[in-house]
Image (cartoon, rainbow, N blue to C red; front, side):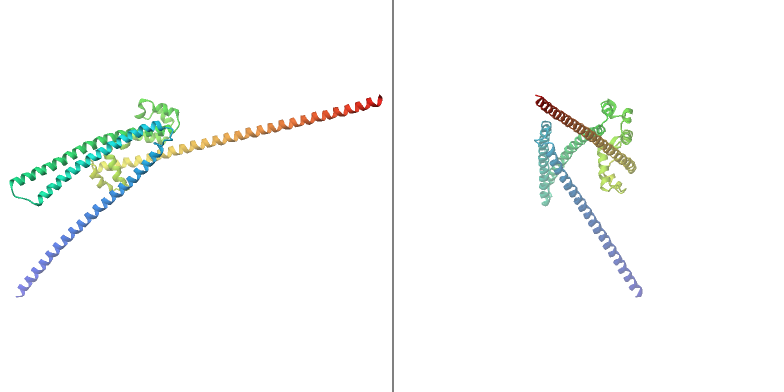
Length: 354
């Protein structure tokens, strides 16, 4: 009897353990779902914040552009009007493309909703199954066609973006070098090899930090460190999001297909050196400009001092001439007075003797 009681108790305990285990598993599942939902919500909130920030930046840029470029009082109104026309045509193109995309998405959405309505009232007949199959294939084909078209557009935009970035990089370097004010620099920039090698003559006329940065770019594959622009931009975006902490690498792997963790580590090492050298270059150009401004101000002070001295000397000469003229006038006045007195004495003498 005691053995039976023990067996029942053991079975009850085992059942309780099994229930506790199931409850624990269910609880863990709910926790995971809650964590997943919170993560998704955090990502959505981050996306919305980023979108709002970009929207504000775009509005400010548009305001600055309208104020400076398209100002009707601008001296370069004729030149800027060409940009204005180009922007207008591109805006029209974007609106047309947006309307086209919305139309395609609306069509796909309507097909999906129609399929959902059919699935609510399933009929086990061959005709119904064939109809569902046809509808599913139609939706799938529409989605695949849309994705393929957008993929081609995206790839074309990436090529255009890469070309634009390369052109801007060349222009940026030229502007920075022109800012240094060296006639030798301008001559070197006109040479065919200027965009490829750091010319020896150029080295002699540029700050060491500028030459070091340019040489670094040439030796390590340019401003993307040998990576294609798409991968490099994704790398920078994720790294910036994590503020440079090494935890970003796991997320970066999700965006960088075909890249290993070691590849990212090496690129991170290159990027850190790039940032240091780029900052040194900016600081060097800033100091050079400050030095130029200081020299300009000193020259201006010297000029003002020279002009002041010249003015003082001129005033002194003017005063000396006035004093000399006054003395001459007094001398002549005295001579006239003396002549008058002499004449009066002479007349008086003649009068007494006559």
